[in-house]
Amino acid sequence: MRREPTRREPFWQAYGSHLPSGHPHHALTPDAFSFGGGGAIADELAARVHGGTKRATTSLGVEFTELDEPLPVVGSVSIVLTVGLDPVAIIERVDVKTIPFADVGAEYAAMTVTPADGRRARRGARIRVLKRVSRIIVERVALLFLRSDLAFR
Image 1: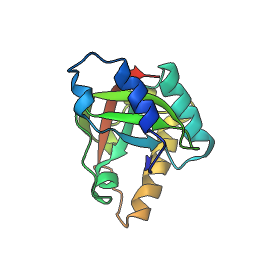
Image 2: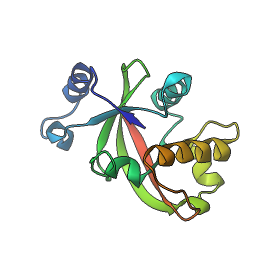
Image 3: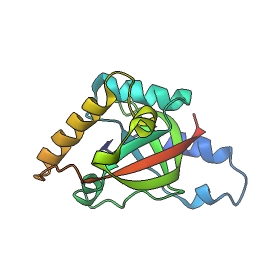
């Protein structure tokens, strides 16, 4: 996931205006991200989140630690962006698990990737990320599995 500054404030304010007074999300500061390395896949996955069909994703913990960012936790919220940095949805993490890479099976793959050859695409993306941060991939590397609910679109 790519994280960048965005035009997220008006979108976040619109979401907040629909929440009851005292809702815990009023006190949160969401992060904002677009999926993958950008391009058409980022927009496709953002559209799936917006449509409610993509409710999970995976990340490497090192993607966060190398950028000095906190790991996602249950209850955290994020603004999902297009590759053009336009906000399309706000999601809330409802489940965060650490799963060994080798144990990612069809159940998780079906929730996190596009239908065509998801495991190979996911493995290739993870290898590219690890090469960028000078790490060596092994079959037991842990993935963060993040399941979310659509909170706003």
